[in-house]
Each structure stands twice: as structure tokens, then as C-alpha cells.
Amino acid sequence: MMSKDSISDESFETSKLHLAELVVREAQIGLLVLDQNELIVLFNDWLAKAANLDEKEALGKELTQLFPELKESRLQSAVTTSLQMGFPALLSQSLNRAPLPLFAGEEERKMGIRIEQQIQVIPLGSGDGPRFSLIQISNVSVAVKRENMLLEQAKELKRNLIIDGLTGVYSRRYWEEQTLIELRKARRACLPVAMIMLDVDLFKNYNDAYGHQEGDLCLALVAKAAASALKRPRDILARYGGEEFVALLPETDLEGAKVVSKRVLQSVETLQIPHKQSNVAAYVTVSMGVSCGYPSEGESQEIILSEADQALYIAKAMGRNQVIICKNKGFFTVDDIPLSNPLAERKHR
Amino acid sequence: MFILNELQQDALLEIFNIGVGKAAAALSKMTSEEVLLSVPTLEFLEWEEAKAHLPGNGKVICGISQRFDGPFNTEAVLMFPEEKSLEIIRYILGVDSTLESLTEMEQEALCEIGNIVLNACMAPIADIFSAEFRATMPEYRSGTSEHVLSVDVEETNRVIMLMLVKLQMEKHEIEGYLAFLSVLPDIQRLTANVDRFISEFTK
Image 1 (tube, rainbow over the protein chains, first blue to last red):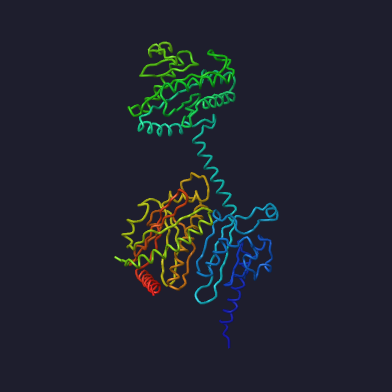
Image 2 (cartoon, rainbow over the protein chains, first blue to last red; image 1 turned 120 degrees about the horizontal axis):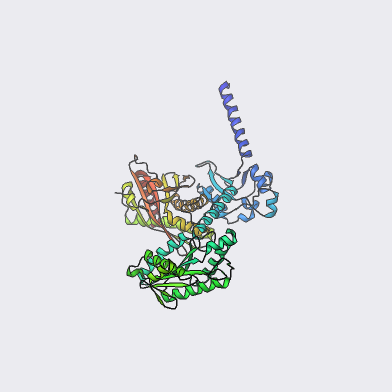
């Protein structure tokens, strides 16, 4: 005679089985089970819907009968390994994309956009009993999208660190980084490094006359023109701040820097941007200070930059729209006419 | 400490190289590029000794681990220095990223590579035992080697079978470590089976 307890145990077991069946059916992931002979014995609703197949069509078939593209695929060999060895396998989305033709809806099916899949192949049962292989498929489309967004944003962020947003030339930060690198290289190789400081003449007047929007546009145009005058790939033009720019010219001596600065002057002049508030010319012009140093002889970034800055100061004092060179602590015009610093200072005052 | 004779050592290396050879073939197929994998060295170490041999030396390493249970129980871990993992996985996936750590998807891809290598290395071990193993899904961990190996310090008798793994793709080369953490009786069972394998082989 059966005890009361065992009956309730039995019904409990039955209800547990029933519950398990319901869970498998309703789970919002794909579940597929293959038996020892690699025949499908379970194919849940989520999978049936995504694969646009009926459970009945799937049962009793081999995986490759249902999805011929899986022949000799990693998924197929993972299933075989799980059944023969009992080892589980993970198929990542990044390395396998979407092995199964599963679609979120009719629209996606027509367009051929598969659900992004992460697949786990899990051996079931072990030892003496029959073994099964469970294929669990998760939809990772959202995660993939989120990650692509993250990567894009990271790239954008990096770009913003390198490029000045307003003018499109390099940022001051990037220039600082590259200057350190180039000075180190120049020190080792006993090569010169040239620096050009550039200032847009009477830019405040331009802004007052044409408005800030036009002013921004003017800066961008001048920057682009100046950058195009730098020819070698390691030459860098960066926005130093406001209407000031700086050019880093590795492996360049004063003669070379002179040539480049003349080209920059011309390039900006060619733009012929009208400037009615300028007493220098009828169009926008620039002033430049040029210096050059040998880091191997102890000339630091500060020295080279400060010399270029002083030269720029003199160029402005001398009437703008010109290049002044700093050589052996003295100052010269591009045509090598020497100037004395006190003279320049007096003129400026 | 625990020392194998030359024959046992060679046989084990051979066994693992069969495994990684198969793993390399699988990876090559998956990435459509030639992947070379080799296990040039193998040693048995106690945990304290092993620490000095592990990559990173306090630096961050990435590890993929799986536990295998059967006649020989072991925690198998494949470890790479983090920066090299970043380089190689981004090369394989063809992503141009400057993020300093692996993203979720990249971690998962690394997990899969680890899964392929670890399964492939355990398959010939299962063969020489002529027995079955139960294995867990691969798990990703990053941190110091202590963390990645998550060593239970209380446990005595712990032996690590440590192998250098070289993975080569195009001009990228990544050196990692394959560690099998077991207790001494398990390792002794392993060597006993290696002996059986050798004697059958030389019959």
C-alpha cells in the first residue's frame, strides 16, 4: 500500500517536471538539445520563433539537416566534442558573429539582419547514462550595439584630445606630447628642432568688426592655410590658445624654418580674408617668431619656445605681417638684417 | 620537489603539444589566419615557487579558467599579460580601440580562445586516463596572478603543473602560461597514467 507521503512525493515530482517543461518552453533564450546520435530532441519556442521553424520540423533531425550552413562549423565540432568528451564550449559573438540563421522578426529576416548570438554548448548527463548536448543561445544584439557605441565614443574622445575642435589643427596637448618626443629624438641624434610661434594680426579688431562667428571661421581658415604650408609628415601645427598657433618642425635648422615660415605667410596672404579694421593690410595677416635649438647641446623646450615667443613679440613690434628669426640670442629679419632687442623693445613702447 | 624523469617529461610535453596543435588548427580556421601554438617547457612547482615563475610579477594578467573533474581533478588556467591580451585580441577581432582594458565582448572572445586551448589540452589527458571528465564553462578573471589562480592558501599539497605557451600570429607573438592546479595525489595519478601510456607505446 502506498503511503500518503509517497503519493505527494510523486505528484511533487510530476509537478516539478511539468514546471521544468514550462520553463524550457517559455524561457527567453534559445534552447536546443541533441542526443548521443546528434539528433535534435528538444527545440524550444524562442528558438522556433527566431528560426521560423516548427518544433515538429526540428525534432529528430540532425543540426546540419536543419541548418546546412553549419557543416564543418565550429558549432558542429563543439557539439561533437561535448558529446564525445563531455567538454563544454563557449562561442563568443565576436569570434563567431551569428552562426545560426535567427532573426528578431519578419523585417529583419527580409533584410538578412541576424540576431547577434552568444552560444554555449553544455554536455548533459555523464558517466554510464546517455549523454546529451544542450545548445543555449543568448541574444546579445543589445550588448554588441552598446559596445560599438562605447568604442565610437572612446575614439571620439581620443580625437578631441589630439585635434583642436575649433580649427581642426592639432591641440596644444598633442603638440606638448609630440614636442617631448621629438626633443628626445633630436637629443639622441644631435639634430636641430625648430619652432614657429604664430599670431593672427589684430584679431581682436577682426572680432569686433565682424563678430565672433566670423572670427571663428577666420581662425579655422588661417589655421588650415598655415597647416597646409607644413609639408613633412612629422611637422605639426597646433593651436596654442586664442589666435596663437605654434609649429613644431623636427630635424629642421633655421634656414629650413625660414623657408617654412615664408610659405606660411604667403599661404595666409593668398586667402585674402578682408580685414577692414587692420592697419597692416586690407586683409588678414599673421606675424611669426622663429627659433631653432639643438637639444643635444642642452637647449630645452622652454628656451626654444621662449626665443620663438620673443621673436614673435618683435615681429609684432616691427609692424606685423612678417617673420623674425632668433639666432644666437640675437634677432634678425628673414633677409638676415640684424635687429637689437632693446631697439625692438623701444619701438614697442 | 616533485620531479619527472626525462621520459615522462617528454611524453607529457608531447601529449600537450598534440592538444595545442589541434587548438591552433581550430583558431586558424576561426580567424582565417595562421595561428601557431606551442608548449616548449613544462615544470612542476609548489605554489610558493610558482609565484616567481608567473608572468606579470605583480602586474595585471588575464586568465581563463576551467575546472576539470574526473580521475584527475584540476583547475586549468590559461594566462596572458593584460597588455599583450589587448594587443592580440584586438588584432584578431580587427578593432581599432585604445581602451585600456578589455571590453565585455573582448573578454568573451578571449574566454573562447581559452576554452578551445584548455579543452584541446585536456582531451589527450582524458585519452591517457581512458576516462571521462566533467568540465565547467570557461571563466574570465583579471588581476594579479594570485587572484587569477585564486589560490586557497590553506590547502596544502598543492602542485602546479606550469607550462609556457607561445601563441604566434603574423608578426604578433604572445607568451602565456598554462597552469594546472592540482593536489599531489592527483598529479601522482597523472604521472602513473603517463607511465602506462609510455609502456603501451613502447610495447
